[in-house]
Length: 399
Image (cartoon, rainbow, N blue to C red; front, side, top):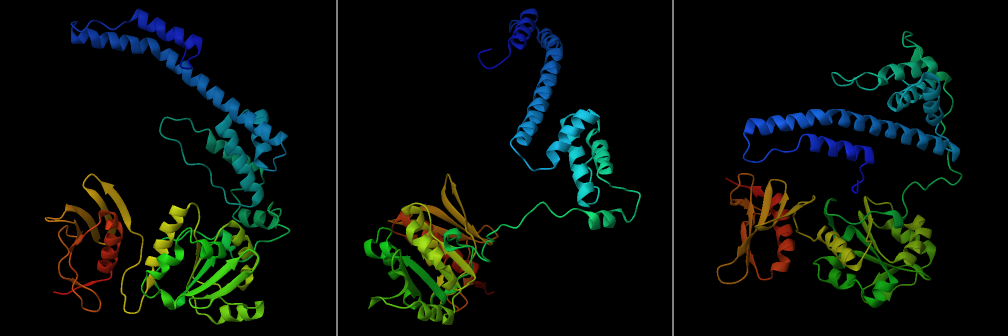
């Protein structure tokens, strides 16, 4: 009873155990098994009663929820149909829901699609109820033109267009976070919009991380401020004053494929207000959440930047942490942490689909790839493994 059992259930359980207690361990096995079967047989009526009570409570709760939704002003036309099926046809919950679905399908001009047949031995209450609702909704399954006739005569959809329709594309504040799924993009076709607060304080360290990446000089950088709005940025001059017309023309002339926004909430709201001047590109993302998450997301964005002469594969790396250490998989290749090196450092190996070391692979430029490397800092294992996997996934095997 302390665990939630009703009193009459608890007393019935206790009575069964008093009448058929467990026999001592030294009693014959057959006698102990017979005693267990006797107790199960004695408890069977109780379990059946519990099942019936649970089903009655489920149906009562579900019907009460529908009544409450109607009282609160719900516009779902199936809710009154469920209560109608209960009150007029005497259906239980499952049959009433099937009746409402059939009634809705008949009135909407849809084809008859009754629920799947029940399992063997279960009563079929939903399919007849659906069929009755479909007939009450105007459906005539014997008429070959029934669907066309009802579709033509169906009432307009209940959906109403909002007074202020959404823009054709999401605003920057609604863009997803950076991932490693999009294809690599050369740096001249990448556009980074940085918040003015981050440019002044460097709280996330975006500029320092960007400058450490080869080829970043070819990327385009803009700064967004809550007061100044969107402005171009130069590594030598800083923020460049620019009016709206010139800024729009400058962005229109750029050939961008990848756009990332790193800004706080106030700066994002200002960018949302000026979103019409932003170019429409293939990949549009923004960092979000905590500083640590934004740094991790920005690293993913940096890793997709392709400098001149770089050749590597894109795609999502599936990471797993096993007892032996970290491992990642991309395509047919798996990179694993192989433990400490013989003298110092940490070993990382790459295996191909055969399960052995990935020997014999070369980059598209002909450089041989080595399936085992040694790194000095174990904290850099994930980045080193990601670089290896992307090189191998874009490699060729000769011979």
